Length: 163
Image (tube, rainbow, N blue to C red; front, side, top):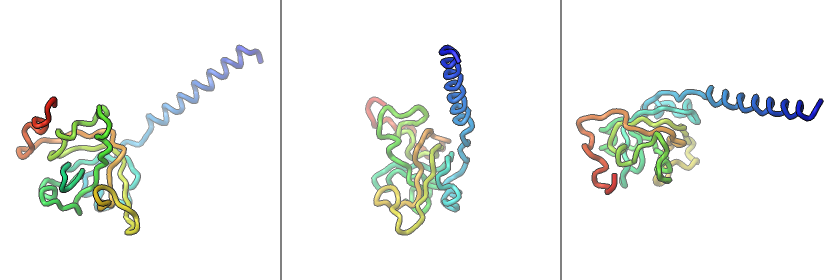
């Protein structure tokens, strides 16, 4: 085999490897569409899965960064009806494309796309403040307001200068 032929074969091999890798990425599983109640009802079924979850988001000193089943549970601070939301999502400004400012998200129904994790064994450390939550959503790639209601804050970022 001549040197230019081996070079051409090497280029073809690299091209095919890159094409295969791109095909694997494109065939990645679509996130499973769920709500918080479904995740809480069957956490082991969704553990480690890519999910698109909707729920009511709160970020406060009292509750932390949580996704609740609904507004009533959030206002009652019923953590049994919530999932911890990984706060590192907001740690490195500017936020990733697809992730809104935290002031826009809190106290709204939101849609989060990320990885659901569950630690159900009593000896396992949990997630969040005091490690009290047995489940979390992490690896978040999309975090947006899903719908607005009459009870939503009218201008949630107004108290933050420059927003």
